[in-house]
Image (tube, rainbow, N blue to C red; front, side, top):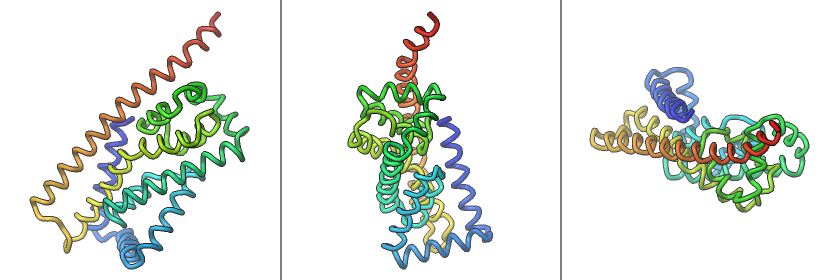
Length: 237
């Protein structure tokens, strides 16, 4: 799962560069969006945050928006905006799940052993569990927002662990978009030395994200298995 996600990032990077260099129809839209973001930075940033929050609440994929942040805003600002937007989106979905759709979410969670174990395990050491769940690709971002809303985890633990846990993937995805933009714009294309540093930085970021995700997935799987084991054994008796 994790390796597939890294591969997806690489493929998306190649597609973005191909679209821009090949002057495909989508390239014009990307160029217009980049120009608008450059000329109206505050408005573009606000629109991006609103779009990300809505995507989180409506179960829409946020990875493409995260990569778009790199294209539109560059690495530092893109990471900052995505971190803010993803945290706000996760908070909004958590609030909807906890206060407006709790019964509906609980019914869905009850039919899935992994989510059911997650709900049970969140009663103790909630911060650590949320952090591992965010670092691991085991449970998608949007589903996790709602699944955690029916647990007993405190909101402050949820929010802080969510923000920290999403940072590695956020940096990687925004990095992808920023590199794609640099390679696709001849006028601002980096020199050979700078390009090499960009490539090394990207590979290092991807490798570190992969290692963190693998460790978190293993730790999370062990905790969920431990939580499920007594229930399975009791059922067998």
